[in-house]
Image 1: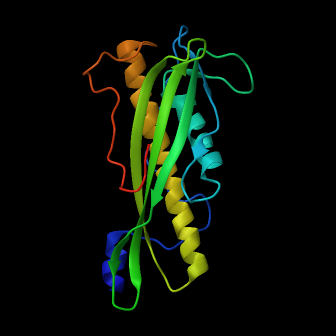
Image 2: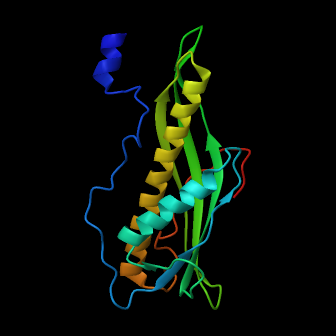
Amino acid sequence: MLITTAACGYQFRVAGQGPTIGGGGAPITPKADAPTLAIINFQNRSTEPNLETKYTAYTRQEFMTASGAQVTTGSGPSDLILKGQIIAVIVPTLTFTLQQTLESRVTVYVNATIEKTGTKQVIWNQLVTASMEFFVTNDLQFNRVLQTRALEQAGRFVAQDLATRFLYHLESYGTAPAPAGTGSSVTVPIPSGFTQ
């Protein structure tokens, strides 16, 4: 089993930030006429505490470098506002023995909406999901650390996905809503028991 585990590339090291997904591309410089965007703190409707602060920070970071918009900080005026909600966090078991769970996965569901500041017109809406796997050990405290790291990585992946999707929207439609039937507003299935 040790040989199989080593061959899969899994590591149990927890010190430091840990690996990040993507993020290797060069930053995208917003155009001179790019809209300004304020990102307000996410709402957390999941049972996982304190995710809203981290997910908001990840989203601000990604939108500053990869969305094509000029992200504003503080209480300054902006053309657009991004509102996010963490809809749900699911932690299913992937592999197990009769005695113990061996591997789990965290899956997060996040909804993001961008609207015009003055008119409150929604120009962009996305419901996205991201998953990360982690090993489960006999140490409950260590397992929690691994699950927290997986949640953080999933949040970074969500932020990157949202920034990339909004960049495509800006390049295709500017600050206007996408025409009906274009598939710009993408949704993913939400698990039963949760509502958007």
